[in-house]
Each structure stands twice: as C-alpha cells, then as structure tokens.
Image (cartoon, rainbow, N blue to C red; front, side, top):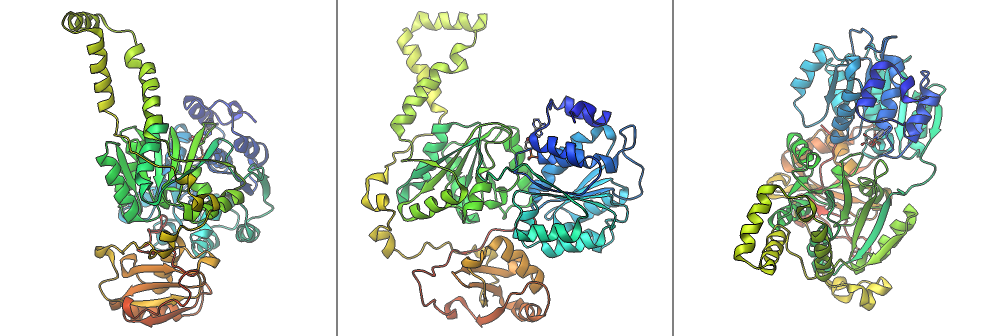
Length: 574
Ligand code: AMP
C-alpha cells in the first residue's frame, strides 16, 4: 500500500510533511496489519514506527471520510516508557491526525495531573502516556477506557525493563477484551513474548529489525582517553565533529550537571536533560535543541530511549553505558531516518576490555583512536573557514562599498588577519589532549597501577536529596548479575515500599546484592510494605541505622559498587 491509497485526511498530512514513501516498517505494517489485526512488531527506534502504528490505528479511529469516529470516550491509547517519548509520540500523532480532527492528550509523570484530568474529561479520542500516570488516571476514573478500540505498547521491552509490567498488565486487563493490541519492541525477549501471548489475539508477527542489532548508519568510534582528560576530550570531539546537534551522555545527574556547566562556560550553547529537572524544564531543553538555540545536550540515560532530535549527528559517551543495550539505545539517538551519525565512546585504559565486550555483544566494529588533537582541529578550522558561506556568499553592494573603504585604510593581509581573529573568537577554545594508546596498560587492557590503588570513584548523594539525614540501610538480594539498575529499582522500591523518591538516598549496587538508604522517618513503613506478599519476588532486609554502620563488603575488588550515588530518576515514573 502506498501513502496515496490511505484515507484522504492522513494522506494530506503525510504529503504536507513531505513523507512520500513509507519506511520499511510502515510498508510492512500497512501491507499486513492495516486490516485490523493485532500485531507484534520488532522494529528499531528511528525506523518510523510511530507513524507506522499511527497509520495502523486508522482502521479503528476513522470513518469512511477520514474523520474521527464519534465517541463518548477515548478510542486509542498509546503507552510509552518515558515522558519524553510519550510527548514526542503525541506531537507526531497530532500532525498525522490533524485533518481527521483528532483530539489528543498526553498523560505523563511530572506534569500537572489536574490539567490532564480536565482535558480527559473534556473529551479526547487519542491518549498517549507513561504507564504509571495512565494507571493513576484510570484508577481515579479520569480516563474512561470503556470505548478503547486500539491499544499500542511502544518500546514494550523498555517498559518491562523499567519495571512497568504490573502497570501494563493492570491497564491491559482493564481495557475492553475486543480491543486491538499493537506491540512495538526493539527486541522480543521472553517477557514480551509472554505479554503478547496473554494479551493479543491471533497476532501478526512483523520483523523489520532483520536481526541486526547495531545501526548501519552509525559510525562507532572508541576514543582512548587519559583518566583526567575526559572533559578535554569531549570539548575537542565537539569541536572536531561540529555537528549541528550533539548529545553527551553521563551516568549520574551530578556528572551531567557538572559537564553541562563546564561546556556552557567554554562557549558551547548547551542544555541539560536529567531526572533532576522538572518535566517542564526537560521539555524546554529539548525545545532549545530542536529549534537550534542549543547545540549540545548533556544527558543521563533518561534521554537514551526513543528520542528523535533533528540533525543530531554526534553522540558522545563521556561515561560508559552500563551494558551493550544501553550503548545501543544511547547511540541510536543518531543515524536516524537515513542520516549518518557518529557514536564516540570515551575509553579509559581500565575500561578497554568492557568496551570491547560491549561492541562485540552489539556486533559492531569501532574505529579506535586517541582524542582529536588541537592541531588536527585547527587544520579543520582553516578548511572550514575557507568554505564558510561568509566568504563564498555574494556580497551586497553596500558591503562591497564598505570593503573598498577598508582596503583604502588597511592592506588585504591586515583585513584577512582581522577576519581570522573574528572568526576564531566565536569558537570554543581547544584543549591539549594526550593519546594514552602508547601506554602498555592501555594496549593490554590492564588496570594501571595508580588506578588499581585508587579508591573507587565516589559520587556523593546530593545533599538536598539525601534520605533525610541519617538514613536506614536496607539490602536487596539482586545485584549487577541480575541487571540491578536504579532505573527500575527506584520506581519498584517507591511503589512496593509506599515511599517517594526523595525518601531514597544512596544506592550501592554490587555483584549479587544492592544496598540502599531510606529516610529514617519512613523506614518502618517501608520495611512493613516490602514484607507484604505479592508482586515481584524480591527479598529486602534491614541492615542498620546509618551509612557508617552499613556492613563492609568482603570482596571489595570484584564486588565494587556500581553506584555510590543518588541514582537518576526513572523517566516514565510519575
Ligand atoms: P520513529 O522511529 O517513529 O522515532 O521515527 C524516526 C524518524 O523518521 C522521525 O523523525 C520521523 O518523523 C521520520 N519518519 C517517519 N516516517 C517517515 C517517512 N515515511 N519518510 C520520512 N521520514 C519519516
């Protein structure tokens, strides 16, 4: 099926958006699932899957003339893992369904639930949201799901990873049985297959991922860095690639805040995107990137999934992602919709083996090098200056007149030199960097002696957000080996323990266990709630009254904590 064969309201919106051809996932969905069947689709982000399900839903939403069917309650529900993704989906569906006259609302954590409630009660046809907030609206009867004809699960694997299974099951149980269910997921692990078996009927299986886990349009670069030169390497990389937009990933809020402040100071127009910002501030950051007011976004993994930013040609991993999947999702912010992109991983010697393994897991080859040097960038600057439209554009008459006057007073060389100074003045200064590649420790991927002897890197929990002074330590019988990650631990502890995020202080993740701090004032309640049966099969035990009395790990080397930090906030959590 071609776009021209679609309902006239959708075809018009697509044509105005200059989408002439369906992407492979759109073509596959239109060919197979436009007739109203359930579908389980594996497709990468960046493949055009939002428009794909937007079009697939049309059968359930539009009448013969392409207008929205009359209904007293919402007809379609799209569930996405993160707030940013949900808002992005809302924007995409808004233009796609503009001529059908659809009323669309997003319901996401961090935004005012009263405003959402009002819009829901005013009457909408399409609702997009994060699982926790949607469940909340259903439970409070603001969201009427009795007329739902279609439910879409976007990035379903990520929703399970983030611990949203219970919320998803609640929503799917509550919606009408005869609804249509479309599930989109980058991968189809067992959990997704099980969800599909329980909640889909006779579903079509569409696979456009083609089994390829890496992104063909992304060039991976592994950049050897000396431990103290990470920021310098980021500065030089941003200057070297000169992407219209770039994203720099850090692992914690503190690290990202610090790096963003440094880059801003150095003259890069930059914004921050992390869980410590309100949703409104996060939206403003994204808007600044979208309209070109900012060139660099420093982010934690809240930005790693699904986000689609125009002209984002460079991703820098200033700190290593936790695993190959996180590397893939962060990198997938670039190389979208046929555009080429670079994903640069900064690799201190001590991490070389891990990076090698992650790249192997992803099935991608990286080009290894040191960071771009100041000399290399200066050379590039000269070439870029020669091509600058400032010099190549046809000058206006008045400009030629002024140039002649200047030539009457100064030589051509003087004028040229002045132009060079002005041109360079607007560029952030370059850094002197070294390539530690020649060091034996790096070549062998061994830990250098000073790194072995150094205490583990410690990010202190934010003072204002620590667990209310003296916290009580708890232990969880899940660690690194079972993918413990604050991204899903934090919402799970809040939900099961009946506490809020500010009540949770430091989280320390070891190989086989995780220790975390709960504000003393709610520790009793938390312990009681966690002891209640049901939900996740996770054991929690109380350890002691303060961080100082927390038992010391017996195997410090191997079982070093992954975080000694206030973990970043989970994106989709209200
Ligand atoms: P998604 O996978 O939904 O995040 O989409 C990735 C990007 O592809 C977005 O910028 C879409 O707007 C763009 N896109 C989707 N469908 C098409 C199409 N048929 N032609 C051109 N661009 C598209």
